[in-house]
Length: 226
Ligand code: ATP
Figure 1 (cartoon, rainbow, N blue to C red):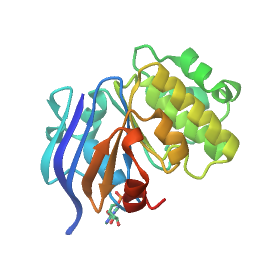
Figure 2 (figure 1 turned 120 degrees about the vertical axis):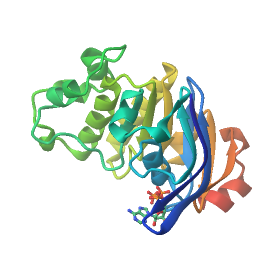
Figure 3 (figure 1 turned 90 degrees about the vertical axis):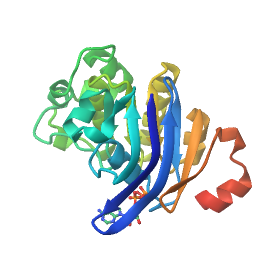
């Protein structure tokens, strides 16, 4: 459904991506991997038109995303949970979920079922939630748009262990429902078991794509520094 081919992206004069290739098929969970600064977030920003690539192609369900502004890209059925979660601080949890809602299989009841903490806190202002709860809210908001492809950038970064486990449980539930997802996360021990495929970036280039089982120690040493 998503095909990214040979994109090159710049921040002003400085080039960050030198040829990224990536695809996600319907129903797949694809892990985008690589050490810090290798271009994962820039790839996601490129897909969503936030840092438009200078060359290469990006298609989603055969639509050319490079021709569309960001707000239209979101309407094509892509849902982003950006690094550093962004909720509306002065809206309640429930209001945050409802403002972006679009009809589909994800509705308030199902999102609150996935994240019971959001149900318990439905009337609280978003800015009174803990960091982890805000992250759940950010994921819930993205689901409420009923994205055909969900994109998670470091959704468990810097959170308390208990909350991380709740978010991973939700990610596993999404996988078992066949939610197509592109996911960036540093926790390989959680990420690899849910990934159908992995794509590794090194210095702004795709250097390897394959199934997680094929990610041997040599590859991990070379590209992931673990
Ligand atoms: P991390 O895991 O640290 O988030 P990443 O793999 O997501 O890393 P990017 O954030 O995409 O990597 O960064 C790729 C390259 O682009 C890095 O060299 C980084 O310094 C550079 N870069 C990122 N954001 C900017 C920016 N706003 N302006 C200039 N250069 C940037």
